[in-house]
Amino acid sequence: MAYASPPAPGGAQPSSQNGWSALGDPTRREIFELVARRPSAVGELAEELPVSRPAVSQHLKVLKDAGLVVDRRDGNRRIYQLNLDGIGALRAYLDQFWNEALAAFKKVAEQRSEEVE
Image (cartoon, rainbow, N blue to C red; front, side, top):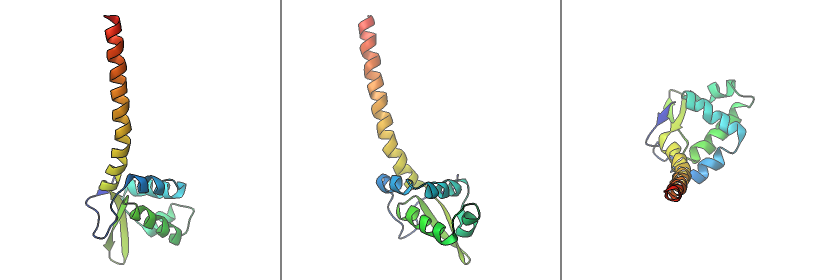
């Protein structure tokens, strides 16, 4: 996966709420997955999708505003790649549920252990 961190100057601050909303659209999610495989320009992404270049650009703007991708200039085009901080915000959100599930499992296991003794 191609990651970038920290976000580009003027980039959006990552937020799990914005990230999940941005990934709610199937086309946007597919663009996100393509960018996760390798940094890409709009034209490269449009070649792999059944949508126009302007549509890809609009989806990338939403992903960028959500803090999930960053871009850098490469000649006359922009290359998009994942923003590690944005991915981290999504993971932190999921981790809170995982940690709660593990704590609940531990509690049940300890109670059963006490019942057996």
